[in-house]
Structures are given as C-alpha cells and as structure tokens.
Image (cartoon, rainbow, N blue to C red; front, side, top):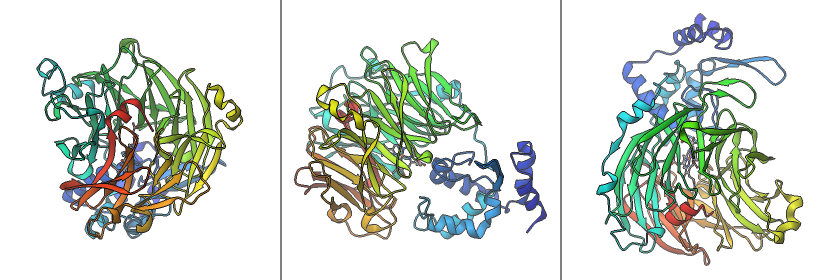
Length: 561
Ligand code: DHE
C-alpha cells in the first residue's frame, strides 16, 4: 500500500482545503491513460452519475469520492472512500451489484470496462463546466418558427391517444398511434430521453434527454415534427409545462442534474428566459454543492410548478406569473427527493424522499408541507396510482425499490362522501406483498379495477420480466402474475428484458408495458386488455430498441393515474 494512500485517508476532504485533499487522493489513485479516462468519463455519465452524483457525493447511490470523512449521528468521525475499497473490491461491486439496490453491470459492461471504472472512481472527479443563460441561448435551435407551423391539426389521427415512447439507447422517441397501434413517427432526441410531458393543449410534446437536450415536437403537422431544441445543462431528468388557465402552452420548465439548476423557456419556441440555481442548504442546515432537480409538476389550480430538489430535501413552489419578480415558497421536507405525483384531487403532491424512507406531501392550496409519511425502504412511485380503497377510502399507491411491498397512503379530500376516512389520512393503511423488491412503477386508471405494478430492478428473471396485477375490489386476493417477456413472443435473450412502466390508453381500457431489453435487441411494447388481462397486441419492430417510459397524450395532459 502506498504511503500517500494512508495520508489521503487520514487527512480527508472535510479537514483539508479541497484542493490539497484532492491532490493527495489523486496521487494515490491508480494510473490511467487519457484514453481510459475518456472511456471512464463517458460510462460514468451514462451509467453512474444519476445515482451517485457528478461530484460523487452520493444520493440514491453511495458516496464514491476517493476519500471522504463525516461525523456520524453520535458525532463520531467516520471515513471511507473508493481508495480504501481498492480496485479488486470495486470491480466485484460493479460486476455483481449490491444488496443496497445497485444492479449488476457484468451483462452491460465488458471486463475491461469494469476494470476501467474501478480505477476511474478512485481518481478525483472531474467537475463539468457551468451552464449559463448565454450557453442555453447559444444551443437554442428554432427549427420551425411559430408562424410557419400549421394553424390546425393536419392529420386525421386521434391525438389524445398518441403515446410518446422513449427508445432509450437509440436516443429516439417513437410516437405511436394508440388506436391503430402503428408507429406514426420516430424522431431523434437527446440521449436516453428520460420523460416526455405534454403542453396543456395536447399539441406539443416535450422530451428531455439525459444529456440535457430538450426537444419540442409539434403534433399538428401531417407527421410529428421537431420544431425546436435547446440544452438546459449537461445532465437532466425533468420538464413540465405551464398548465394554469391563461398560461396554457406559454412556458416550459426544465430541471438539471448538472449544473444544479432549473431553466424556464417559452413553451412554443423553447427560447431561454431564466435560469435559477438550486445550490444551497439542506434540510439539515449543511451547504450542498450539487442539489439536483428531481421531479417537477405543474399545478392545475395555481400558476405554479412544484420543483423537488433532491439533495437539499427542499420542495419549491415556483410562481411563474411574474418571471422578473419570481416568488418561490421553499418547503422543508426530507432527503433525497426523487419522483412523485398528484393525489386524486390534484391538491396534494406526494414525492418520495428515498434515503429517508418517507413520502413527503405538499398542500399546493396552502403552500405548506401536509405530511411526512414513514414508509418501507426506498419508495419509488413514478407518479403513483390513485384509487378508492374499499376499507380506507381515497389512497395513493407507491412501490419500493428496497422492499417487497406496495404501500397505500390515505389522502384527504373535502368530499363529504369520504369524510369517514379522515382518521386514516397520511397513514400507510395497507402494504400489499410482492415476491420481491425492485419495483419502479405502479399504475391504475379511474375506470380500471386493477393496480398494475412492475419489478424491473429485481435480480430474478421471473420477477424482472413480469408485472403483478392486484384486484382493487378485493386486495386480499393474490395478484395475477403477467409474464410480459413471454407474452411478447420474442426469443429469449441472455440479458434480462425488464418489464417496465405501465401506461393506460385514453379511455382506460388498455395497459401498455415496455420490455426493456439489451441495447441491440429488437424489443416490444405489450398491450393488455385491462378487463381480461389478456394480450391485445404486441407492438414490435426492428427499430423498437430499449423502450422504457410511455406517455399517453390525454393522460399526461390531465395527470390521470
Ligand atoms: Fe428515472 C422519472 C431520475 C433511472 C425511467 N426519473 C424520473 C424522475 C426523475 C428520475 C427525477 C421524475 C421526473 C419528473 O416527474 O419530472 N431515474 C432518475 C435517476 O436519477 C435514475 C435513478 C438514474 C439515472 O441515471 O437516470 C433513474 N429511470 C431510470 C431508469 O433506469 C429507467 C427505468 C429507464 C431509463 O429510461 O433510464 C427510468 N424515470 C423513468 C421513467 C420516468 C422516470 C419512465 C417517468 C415515470 C412517469 O410515469 O412519469
């Protein structure tokens, strides 16, 4: 063991000026050629930064700094770091994954790539550049100005039933006609589009790539057409539009992971208007240099966005009615905020605070925290699912990455017919058992009698490739297991084909599930009849590679889930 390694462990970033600590760590780190560093940097951005952070301070994933130290809850000094773990141990962790929820990379990365990553993360993190309003302006491309766009819808397609489908690893978006199940158009987008959201009118689709590229697609053309693009940073996950009356299609807001900030743009052109940093203090009163913007949702009852800042645990209510005098309510909740959705009244927004095993609920009418609900490990709701429980009244459901249950949380309402359920509000009233952890998404529809839940992050093929369907009339019944991979009729592949993310069609009669296979394998979306649970159609095509999120126009405009 080199002497400088011990110095780096003992004198860590917390006790030394960062540059000196970094210099020690850097000296102790395994050597890398510039080519290996470039490979490591690319893979880290594509595969690791989302969970571990650009500065590697950790969030959903562990801290991956070469050397760190902090005080534990009893005030004792603790230290650790990737240098302490060393190349062999790190290679094993990357290849095989961990019980803490990290997936195995041995079927995604080669042995050489795993070795590069094990060495790369022992080196001091690269700090990417900031991204200003000017940088946004320089990246902005208005491809078709507003006055050159159609004045009305040019096709005969039922736009309300279009599905915007992420083709993750090809950097594309498929627009699929929900009535005919035909692929209408496939368009180039940013890298690994994370989500799509719709303008209030349903005319414009917005996507955001992991690389921070926002794409604006106009559905009124004969075929969907990209009319503008802009970069909002170098790493991003969320966008939403202005949905309040009088502001329909007017603004778009995008949240970045790097730099940690949100950006406001014109809704129909993406012209950059304003950038707001989210750097600052956490709910524990400590400064954080990388508080990333997680989920964003547009209120229907006020000109406001709910912006969830992951590392600080702060929920921002941003009033977009006057951008020059921006009013923001900052609500303390818990760490680390991730994804979430509305309750059925659309007054309360519920968001997972995944490292605290809590769900935070904001009352957007009063602008205050309504509750912090304790749940099982690592809640991960997607946008959640709302239904009326036979015994407990209105509930919102979330799955868990870290536990084999679906939690049902009672939500309040002014509707007198549910007054008797008030005693249960903001409590987990039931936990539905599943065969394993690794859930990402749950979904139902006001017309459905089913709750669909996936388990794509479960290591077992028999769980990862399936969905469980609970009967909302009788939740004591064991759920029906649906084998999505088998139902696709596609040949079995070595890599898991994770059955991920459900979306209902416009009238709530069908459920669409993606089969997220290897990055070169033809894959599919399997469409089920929600009543009979039978396959209705398999949508497949050589271009159907790594489909993940699906967003039905009507359900996304109206926030139906
Ligand atoms: Fe997601 C939503 C972040 C990994 C598919 N994901 C979100 C949101 C955030 C987020 C902040 C909420 C957006 C909103 O509502 O405004 N996701 C992250 C990560 O940081 C993480 C853990 C790691 C990463 O590097 O990105 C991550 N997500 C994944 C995946 O691996 C998934 C399964 C496949 C993929 O495309 O990368 C995935 N995330 C999704 C989907 C949604 C989502 C489909 C939207 C769900 C919805 O119904 O709204």
